[in-house]
Amino acid sequence: YLENKHSKAEQDGPFVIFNDGNHRMLQQLLSKGYNVNGIDQEGATALMHCVLPSGGVQLACADLLIRKGASIDQQAIDGSTALHSASVVGSVSFIQLLLMNGANPNARDNDGRLPLHWATASRSVEALELLLKESQYNVDVTDGSDMTPLMWSCYNKNELIAKRLIELGADVHEKDTDGRTAAHWAAKRSDINMLKLILKPDMTYFKDVKGCTVMHVSAHEGFQAGVEYIMSLRPESVHDTDKMGRTPLHYAAAMDRVHVCYHLLNKGADASQRDSDNKTPLDYALIKQHEFVVALFTCHDASVGDFIKMQRYI
Image (cartoon, rainbow, N blue to C red; front, side, top):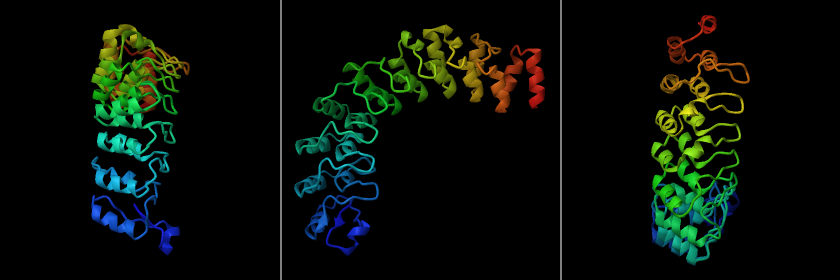
C-alpha cells in the first residue's frame, strides 16, 4: 500500500494494493513519488503487507522498501508493527531482515502483546527462539491481560510451540488477569493433547476469579475428554464449586452438554446440589429448555419436587 504524496487525492488516503511480489512495479511506484510509509484503512504499511494473507512473504520487496526509507517500527491502528506481522507467520528470514534493520523486538501492540506473543500462532520454533533471544523479556513475559506466550500457545492450539516454551522454562502455574492458567485455556479450547501436556494434579485445584477450576471450564465447553482426564487426576473434582456454589454439572446442564452431564452423573455428581441462587443443575436445564438434558435428569434419581418443576415447564 503506497500512498502517492504528489497526488491531490493524498488527503483521501489513496493506496495502490501491492502484494503480488512484483519487484519492478514496486520500483516504478517508488520512483513516481509514492510514499513508502503510506498506510491503508487499518494503518498497515506496504512493509507490513509484504506478509501475505496466505502466510508467504515478499522478502525482496520488503528489502527494497526498507532501503527506500520504510519505517521499521511504524504501528498499525492495532499497535502492531511489521515485526508482529512477520512473527505471526513465523517467517525467520523476514524477522531477521527486520531485526538487522533495527526493528524493536520489545514493541507492544494495543493489547500489550509482543511479537513473541504473536509468534505462538505460527509453527516456527526457530522464529520463537529468535524473538525470545532478541527480546529483553523472559519466556513468561505477559501482555496487557497478563497472558503469557504459553497461554497464547494454548489459545492457538499450538502444541509444538507449547512444548518448546515448557522446555525453555515456561511456568505452567502463571495466571492471567482473570485468574486463568494455561490449563484453563487448554480446556477452553477443548484441546486434550495440550491439557495432558500442561495439567498437573495440583493445578486441578486452581480457580479463576469466578472460582472456576479446569473441570468447570471443561464441563462448560462440553469437553468430555478433558472431564475424563481431570477426573483421572482428581476424582473428587466432580464436586468442585465456584464462587456461586455451582458445580461442573450446573455448567454442563446450563450449556446443554448432555454427554458431559451423563458422565458426571455416572461419576457421582450431585444433581440436587443448589447454588447460591438456590438452583439445581436441573433448574438451569429447564429454564433454558434443554430437552435432552432434562430427559437425562428424569432418568436419574430425580426427586418428586423435580418432577413437579418439570411439569411446570412442559
